[in-house]
Length: 169
Image 1: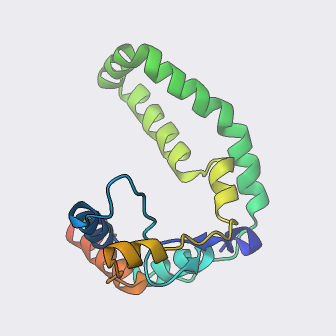
Image 2: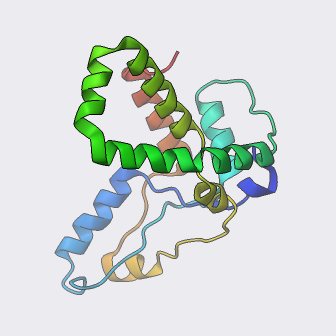
Image 3: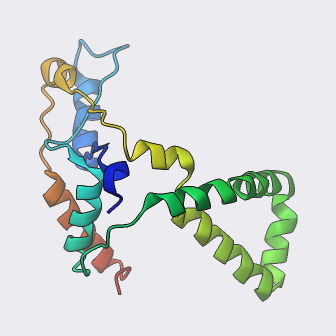
């Protein structure tokens, strides 16, 4: 877990609840031009989410980590993210050709992509500490929206899907 930096609200909502809200908004006469927040039944912290997901995966308990090293790493790789985005936007076709022709280039690109995906940005790190809860009263009142899938059920469904796809080892 991430200590106090992970104590922000993780406003989880399962995809079928999002679809339910969209469907109800399409049918509601009072919905055109309106916007609605949707959320699940329970708002948990990011630390709780990571721990629950880890438990649902059947993994060893997560260690407490200091976020300072992660923040430093995020800051250090930030310019490289920008360069990579620029490079792909500007030189996408030659990069793809290089990737296809060179196994060394392909491995290097894959490792770089993995590092970028596994290291949160500074903005993402800040979000883990934000205590914002999306109020869904308007969706409940105007659409009759009621979330059906709890965070525990959603995590169980996600883990079952990951197992079915052969993505867990």
